[in-house]
Image (cartoon, rainbow, N blue to C red; front, side, top):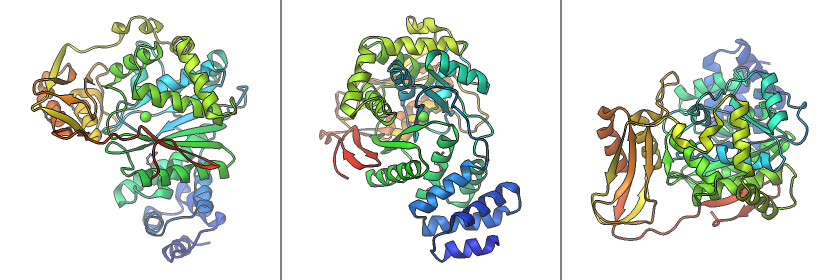
Length: 445
Ligand code: URA
Ligand code: CA
């Protein structure tokens, strides 16, 4: 087999066989196939697409390029959850304990924040003492002991994705449905879960800005999972404004704790309960999503979810007293309000810009190596649709580096649009894609 023939076949719009896909991925990872040929194939895939069978074969070839975590020592159906990335999206910290509290083990590998999106590992590390780097044995022991663990993705998973992503980044081939779907699913499958629930974000802060594209990505990923024998469900949820009110690491941990204490309701709690319900359903722990939802609600109301989060924090070396006293989390020296410049309704928010505003304060990073400040960020006081008067506080900024505040505030003000008309309300959860098809919870795209 020759690499050039595989490129020509895809360039001409034909489907590649499993053997051709394996040959190319293995050859690229081994160094037999150079970057320029891999770039040409990526561009051909970008332009001509891949069908579901090809995309699943590509995903499996990528999984097989590295190690696959073996979680078989943990009893039960292990369920994982993945979000395509958002702002103020602290669902993992709420959902993982709720699901574990329903006796479904959660063995989760998470990532760090990059660009405008936050990362679960950075949030967890704002808890004093918390360790995200566990050995494989410690990880399994932690899940066996308390029913959940959230750790850093091991370095050896899916080397093909690391290489291909770097190439896509510089060849204009990132926004391709089969390439995105295989990239995400290869990492999830290599992490060893038996069941996966995906939270595909849609809107101004998401990878996919249209609802239609978000459903297409959701369907593609469910397809891959089911073809490779992993029960997979995908929700499409709104990211046209931050999910929670807090954007920033310790601030988001505090908000997650408040949800688990039952002190706050709203979109973050709602999406978390729905994700938990689908995780329970996908893991086979309930008959339908309504039953899953009741189980998750009961875990929250009884405080068992909060207790599970405490068990996980203790197990991973963190200080569980943060659950009772969130002032033990890192804070900021100053809190500065940002106010509305005019009367009207909040008509829309540019979620990506709000993420960048928090990043500018020091909560996020532009390069992988950048340090972050866990205590800084912002807490919104208003959401889309709220009425405001000039001078009302839109958000409180938690600041350590005052020199960064003016730019961060300017970005935030530009991101929050105020107009005379009340905007139409938008669904929070657009729908769920399972192997049986699409269930519309919000509206029909
Ligand atoms: N996230 C990933 O992990 N891969 C992509 O290609 C896009 C988003
Ligand atoms: Ca995330």
